[in-house]
Image 1 (tube, helix red, strand yellow):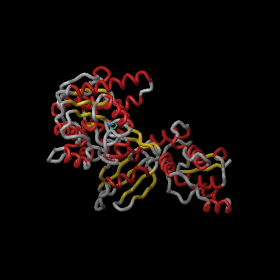
Image 2 (cartoon, rainbow, N blue to C red):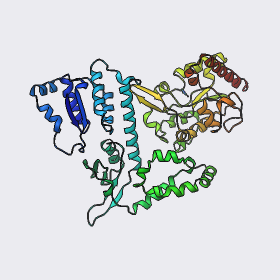
Image 3 (cartoon, rainbow, N blue to C red):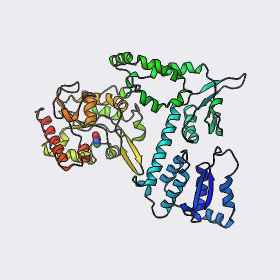
Length: 475
Ligand code: URA
């Protein structure tokens, strides 16, 4: 049995490479966590020691090359920041499998090792996200010294090196140090360096910056979305101590109902929407051109392109889906993937020529999650739907259709309100701001997902019937 102690990803990788070169099976290694801050001490301590033990082994280490997929290394780099001491073992045993004939193991979500690694990755990613959101700097001025900003934060995992580069981009023109109990990061406006951590008892003192933060937080606080349990989950109570705005929460929560009413009346509460990107001239072709520039929500960063509606400018029927899928994102055209094919078949059976209707989506960018090589669809949230609404409004104003058909519950609720229930109101024609005739029916993707064969057939015929009804009312 070999006993190895490692502190960080680089140490683990060096050790794992040596072990693989020497064909050391995972069951013959016992990994433990070295609690020193990574990079603070010289060399690789015990790992290096183990490597030096055998010069022949060392030579082999440097001459053998392993073809490890970059997806594994990315995953390992993130999982290495998890606190669970078993991560080193788990990583090595998965790496062993990858290089011993199971190269595609990461694509098996049902595999126990992969599942555990994915869960750890998720926890670390979430923790990085929280650090980006909850770090608050305090200005320190000492005599003639240049001002410096200090922050103290307690992450759940050892994420300083994953999160710090974000702060160098975000606060490029400030000198700052972020302390965590495990490690600190220092930025002097040129170089990022790491040092030891400090305990909570030595966290930087409060100062007048807090008032600024409080004013800012009070101004962005959205009482319409207040959910105390969610808030505690998103902003765990243990972070509240270092967040100046936490003092305000009680007051803001108490005043929330009255403020919600004012917000609804004023239609405020969300920050940016696509309205800032709309062109002056709002015909379909200028809208299509302009939507490519929209950055009203974050979805634009991960999508290939914005997918605008297609169809004739004089179409009397508009079909509205949820958001583009993987194929739509790549091709730039709505409803060309599997759901689009089912829709084509339903339109055909309803006696409708696809090219005579206008097809679009509530959200114009593909929201997804990367799983190995696959991009899995994720439902857009109310913030993204709200941000994208001006595009749909402009599109429908330009078209002035006689009938709008919502495909699925996301479109139905976006156009007819959050209380809309597809199971109860499917196929019923409503008068709305969008058109004097608006109805909602099944989304073709919901039909594709339906496992029960009889129910699937029933939904298919209801979709065809609703499309036919929609078309007939316009004749
Ligand atoms: N699903 C949608 O809602 N829209 C598309 O364009 C494709 C799939």
